[in-house]
Length: 538
Image 1: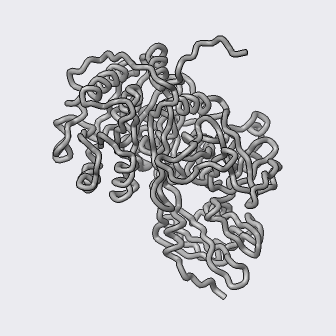
Image 2: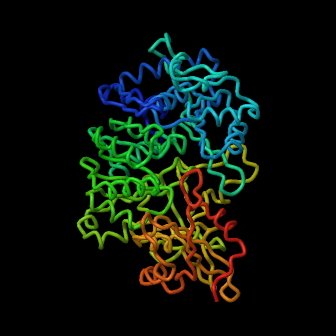
Image 3: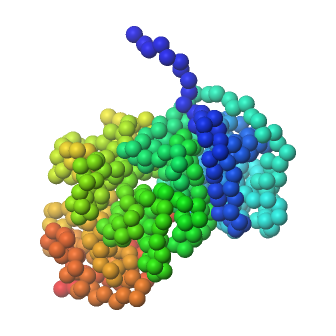
């Protein structure tokens, strides 16, 4: 017997319509690339989204066409999210941090028909342009007065939508139609394309907005530092519109001072970004002695959340929470919302839970697999390869020539993890980054987090280096904090009480910077190249 319910498609345009009906006066504020603050309401944004949809239709954008965009978090890119997807076309957000070679690769691989870009990225587009094979037209995300040389061979966004009707009859189509695509950062091999469906992103918006996730609601003011060019800013442009949250887009200025100014002037209550962003803001606060008057909580993701950051923000009354996910997961898989009995504990008692990646969102199944494929228990002790499945998780990479999933339909994340009986996930390492010493696994993440607690450590990275007896041993690579000069011996003695003896680093090397990937993660591949042939002290 089948249910007798209407079969209505889950489309991102339905989120947009819902927001216009219920939250029309809610603001969307942008620090623009040009400099001034731009603000308008959801009702205003809807009119411009309709204008853009009409303009794109006149340009010849058809269902299934790929529209590339290289842009900062601004209201114009926000408008593209809904107009492009609403037509049944596919918005391909291109990460400029991939660099000219990889950015050219992904635009060609996706076969983008059109390319939009902020003026900042005009030099990048200029370098790419001779090598792009499918792009028919270019558009710079500004007006004529501010375009300058960036608009050479391109139309301006404001000119494109000017005079177009601010009404549009949104088409309906299968909810499994592609709406957006994003490429992985390509740390090993070429970047891989992930194609999101309307259904996947609508379900992700519902689940990540729940109390077990971001817990956003009307009246909150949300500033996404995580870029819209990477995994749809963790899907927040959809989640925020669904929940009626005021959105503050920071544009290109992501330094501590710039973020602080927006947090205070716009009364931001919640933000999201990678640990390096949170570290920059914290350093600014400590340097200036300023306080955060409205920020209540923040989500940190992309790499492990150091305890030092949690404790640093605790002093300012801000709860820093950890989430975990992947480009392949639309992207949030878990979030560190704590149950009431744990929230009631002291910060020291809560810390072991805060440093875990949280519990899975609805519709995300997780399991642990041993190297031989044996499925391991969720007992807080068994450690294995983390595999996931769900309606917002990739089934195949774009144009994949090899299977993306296991034989029984799970996606292997490449992470090594532990899951306890209450569902809390702890990422212990990447399978390719785990250090194998004397037959045991050592987590490079644990060592990095322990080192980051030292006041003289600004950044830390750990790799395994060859050892004649133990196969591999940990090498701790450190960037010193400004004005501090710790010794290697001091740092090693500092981390020892915090780690199992087998995880004590054999050596510490100091560098001026640690290479970060396109998404803010430590590039272990580059560190291995940098320290290739490294000899541990006798």
